[in-house]
Image (cartoon, rainbow, N blue to C red):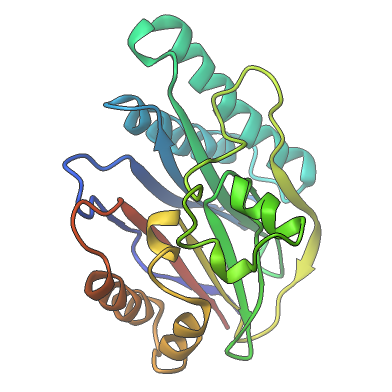
Length: 245
C-alpha cells in the first residue's frame, strides 16, 4: 500500500500577499514521507518569510534525517524554529515574524504528526472523521473550559488569537503525536491552515470525501465550498490531501 498525494493547494485568497506555504518529500533510503503546511504571522513580509523558512527547514531536516522516529520528528521542528529565530536576529524588520505549522510523517505503515498554532491535521477512516488536532488558541482554551462549543471556534471573535507558534525563543510547545498510529487501507489525511478549515465544516469534508475518488478531486470540491462562502479580503488558504491504500 502507498499514499496518493494531491499537489499542494496554496492560495492567497482575498489578500494581496500569500503567507501560507506547504510541501512534501519522500526519503528513498528510509522509505519515509514528510508533509508540512505553515501559516505565517507577523505583518507584511514577515509572515511569508517565516512560513517559507519553516517549510524549507523541515523538508531539509527530513532529507538529512529521514528516519521514522519521535526524535527525528522533534528535530525537524526545532531546526525550523532555530532557523526562524536566526533570521529574526539578522534582520530587524523580521523580529516579530512567526508561523503556525502542522506536519505528518510516515514510514508507509504508520504515521506520526505534530502541530503548533491553529493549522490542523484531520484523519478520516471509513469515510468518517476519526480525529483532528486541537488548536493552540484562545477559543480552544474556552472549549476546554466548557465556555463555548467546539463548533463555535470558527467564527469566534478571538479565533485569530494564537497562543503557540514557531519563532519564539522560549516556550516552544508543539503538540506531538509521538506514538505511531497504524495505517489502514482507506485512511485519508488532510493538513490545512485556518483559512481553509474556517470555511469548510467537518461534515462537508466527509460529504465531499464520499464523492471523490482522488485527493485532488476532494480538494477541488472543498475549495468550491470555501470560495462560495468566503467574502472580501478573506485569509490565505492551503491544504494537502492524501489517500492511503
